[in-house]
Amino acid sequence: MEWLNRLQEYLKNLENQDLYKNFGAFLAMLFLLLSMAGYLHYRRVRRYTSDLKNIENLRADTRRIINNYKAVTAQRQKVEELLAQNKNFRIAEAYQAIVQKLGLFPRLKDAISPAIGETTSGKTEVTVTSQFSGISMKNLTDLLAQIASVPQLYTKDIHIKKTPQAQAVDLDITTATLEPGSAE
Image (cartoon, rainbow, N blue to C red):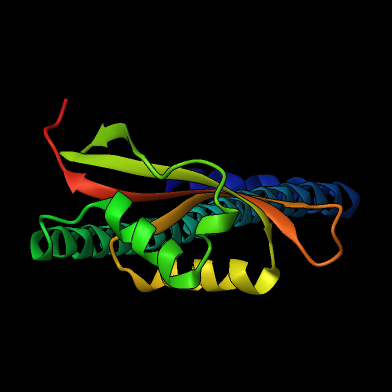
């Protein structure tokens, strides 16, 4: 309590002008201190808000990755089921049946022969590449529809070139399937 008495005595001995100067300096220091505290607080809040936005973006990315993983797992399961259903599926025979059904053998440049591609996850990709010349767009769409109707087949690569004839195109198409094989 002694320091309080000393402060009281000091203030009584000051003139009014000095008292106002000291009081103004005290208020200015208090204002600066409060301003600094407010600034630091809002800077911290802004940083935390930014961190929360980043976390939300990461959470959305994680959800997207998990959903993609689930989709890939479902597709892998579907492929496993397709392979288990028809273990004797041969791409050359199926592709030849499609070409014969559509009457495209006269337009086929080379014989149909399968080629073994890369092995991934215990599955070997087998492809058939064929070239057709002078087929109509209707024949092309029918061929693609027939390939899509066989669940084991998929179109891997397709190149369409317009021929000098008005209503015809040349077609280079690679069709593929997966077969059970040994992993490397």
